[in-house]
Length: 193
Ligand SMILES: CC(C)(COP(=O)(O)OP(=O)(O)OC[C@H]1O[C@@H](n2cnc3c(N)ncnc32)[C@H](O)[C@@H]1OP(=O)(O)O)[C@@H](O)C(=O)NCCC(=O)NCCS
Image (cartoon, rainbow, N blue to C red; front, side):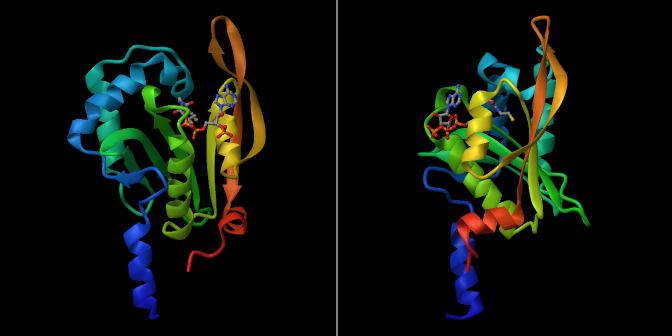
């Protein structure tokens, strides 16, 4: 098979996981993403402060993420059976370090059904095989047991804790920094072609 034929097959499948496919974030997704952002099942995990932002401010944030599709990263919606179930981005990839920062959310009603794991696998494949990332990293709040477990499941390792970084209900909680290197990703998945 020629390089072209192999790459053609590769390109046809690159946005597909076992349960989800990634696609562009469209205008009609913004309302749903704003609803998710305000939901206690996500807001405690995505924002250092529990605050009520104006809806148009949140909408603008998602619009900006949606339009960032240059060499520095990507932001996509994740869809399953025709419905948006989550959103994922790997951003701020910059030479020479080539470290991407991952952010994601799974809609409250779709959590704990395997979507997050699948979204992560597709996003890591894109980051390491198409964006030449040397590493993908993220910051997760120490009380996000499900987040930490899910990231470890796809190969992230805990790299450190930033102590007493987030304040809720009169108490300080740590941030946990996690990362996966390209060689660790390819050791798990092999070379794609
Ligand atoms: C964290 C998140 C991305 C994971 O996605 P998801 O679709 O819910 O995850 P999955 O269903 O693929 O996997 C969840 C895993 O966590 C486990 N889990 C669920 N609750 C848990 C808990 N309280 N403690 C530890 N593990 C837990 C599940 O058993 C499953 O692991 P398993 O497959 O080994 O059984 C998603 O739940 C989410 O967006 N949560 C709200 C926002 C958030 O936490 N974001 C992270 C910010 S960095």
